[in-house]
Image (cartoon, rainbow, N blue to C red; front, side, top):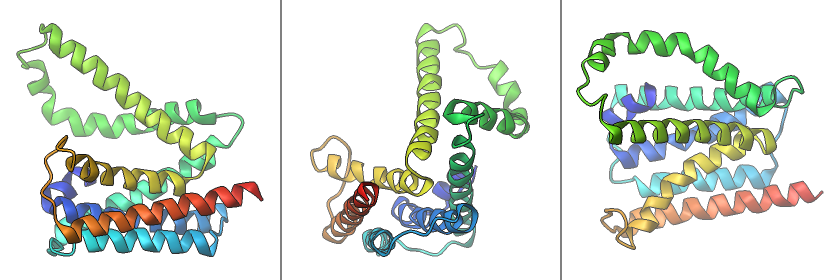
Length: 215
């Protein structure tokens, strides 16, 4: 809800820039909840990523109180989700699959309440008998489950901070694919430089994390 609200209220570059704060919030929560203190190299690489996102969006950072509130709330919820998932997935009684099950179970009442106003529209949907609709519906449902499970498994194997970095880095991919005319993208030097800085920060993060894992 907060993600969709933020996307609607602010521009995509602004949304992408503000979403990088989820990395900062995740790092802070891991420190407070899990007692994990990131190294100076990791902290520096995260700072580089956030700097790059603001450089990329420097011409689009128009302030909108409602939009900024939605995006920042989304950042807090995302960080909390990653940290709790890491905490619970590490317990022998749950694991990644158990965590996925209970996350879905806990979110069911809230999802039901949010969906209540649309039940009539769902019932009156004219394409329930369309085979193409059912194929698309089942594939999208399966892919949604796979994405959620992959996120929890990545958090379990690595950390919530690593999952947060990867989640924000994926927003950069369409920029580079757009240069190959796969996606629509209007080239801008400052925007491209900002995304490249973010990628450099992500590469630096991976380097420091791998070195820490070897120690």
